Length: 119
Image (cartoon, rainbow, N blue to C red; front, top):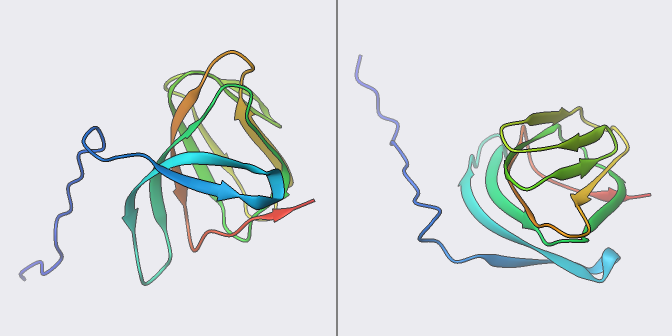
């Protein structure tokens, strides 16, 4: 049986950062969209929180994971450095951000279409 699916490759080092405004926080984050499954809504992005940024308490209607590439990710479940993977279940109240003096870069993975609801 022949596989008809396409292999996708992305060189995130060559992609420009996109600014994603967050009006509720009067702030923005940097991201590089890497993959979106149009059927399920599952997505993967490379993201950067600049030093001092905090995404205040919120929920999602999707579960999501964060794999830390560099820096320290500060979350409602603790602080995590490079190589750590954190999975947040759908509907959990959480916050996450960067330390006051260091940026954090991470992969952001959702299991279905992304949304966010601030508390």
